[in-house]
Image 1 (cartoon, rainbow, N blue to C red):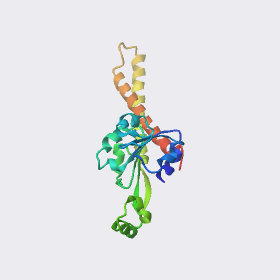
Image 2: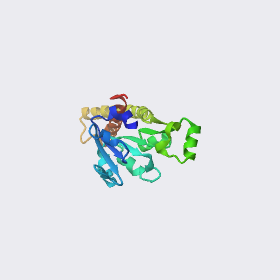
Image 3: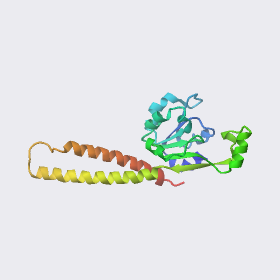
Image 4: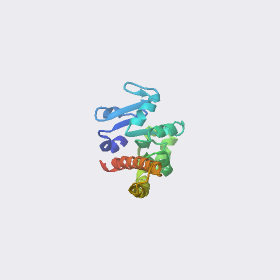
Length: 210
C-alpha cells in the first residue's frame, strides 16, 4: 500500500529501499529500484553498499528498525540529498524527525484498540494486525518548505545588497578585489544549497499528486 501511494512520484527517479520488503518485486520493472539488504537475496545489494547508493538516490525508503538498531543517523546522513521516507510500524510519530532529514513518516495508527489488543494477546504480530491498525503517511516537508522559503528570501536580500556594494566599489575604480568577495561567494553557495533542497521538496509534493 505504501509503495502504491508513492508510485506516481517515483517514476523516472532513482529509488533505494533499505530492507527487502515483501512484494517489492512487482515494482522491479517499472522503477529504477535498488534494494539494500543485510542478508541479500537475488538482485539485492549488501547493506555496506549504502555508502555509495544512498547519496545518488532521489528517493530513499528506510525501515523504522534503523532507529533501535542505531543505523538511522548514518543512513539519514547518506540520504540527505534524497526524499527520505521513514517507514514501518515501529516508527514514532515525531515531527522532530524532520531535523534529521526525514521528509515523510509512513507508519501505523491504532484504529480499533479492542481488536488490536485481542490480536496481540493471541500472539499476532505486524503481519496480522488486520483491521486493528491503519497505515498513514505524514508529510514533514511542508513546514520545511516554509522555513526554506524564508531562508532563501533572506539570503537573496543579502546577495542583492552585496552585489550593489560590489557595483559601487568597481564604479569608484578602486584597486584590488572587492573586500566582501568571499562573503558574496559564501552567500551564493548557501543560496544554491537551499534552492536545491527547496526544489527537491517541491518536486516530491507537486510534480505528481497521488
